[in-house]
Length: 366
Image (spheres, rainbow, N blue to C red):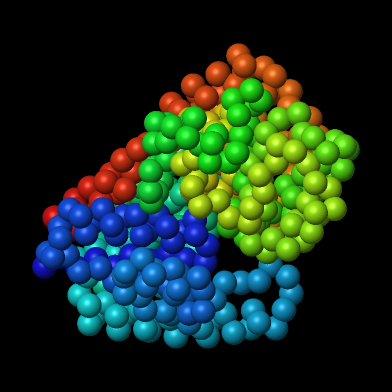
């Protein structure tokens, strides 16, 4: 029986790659593998991982707040308590390997495993490594990455290019475009723009759409799939009632992302690691508006890594409300540029990332 601990959390960008690898390990080994997730108490992984069918144990670890707050005083004590609990978990569970997917939730269990001579694997999703992964990489056995040039942060001899593991299917031919257009009530006479801001939504992209829609007089010159996010659902619904506009599909959440990608001629999106990997697999021309509110400004670095290869266009967050839609319309009228962006972004896709990470886990166990 193989026993493997997987850890990471705080955001879906750390959780879902871990779940994708868990699914690959389960498919590969069946009843011959026992998996245990380790996360941070009270964070989203404590809900999302059990919903995916896996057992998870929470540690009391918390991250440091960037602003001055009394809560930071508890960080060292919670970390010490988490390290003790992590050591206890390893003694009881006896893992053959521990795999970390980033975020402060994974730090205590990786730290303890490395000092207890348990093989460890790190999976770094972003083009700019997180602080915890940089520190832990020195004793890791493998470091799985999704971008070139990661020897800036990690020992080159330990790096393996695997791509980012994703759940579901995001390939170029997973859905029929005609079916997708029908699903959204669209036709093939106008181009389609997809705007996605993540499950919770993005204030900048929503304000961008509001600013654009009030100028249109009731009919958009292109068809738009506009995902507003759950946080902004009521506000944006009320806005659309005040400014009803033809050719706009609006929803808090997109149930059929395969249809959304199949219909879209261009995507406007944030540039979190998993989103970038999805868009590479879908082969979609993309205008990125990176979030400035993330550690190490890693979304800008993710987007820039693609832009440097002619695989994406970037508009800064502070400029998006004023000019992102103008840029998007300009791109939609330039079929040659769209084709070039699609070709270049598709070259960066890694369809079997979960299997590649599972291969590395197998190797360190041996």
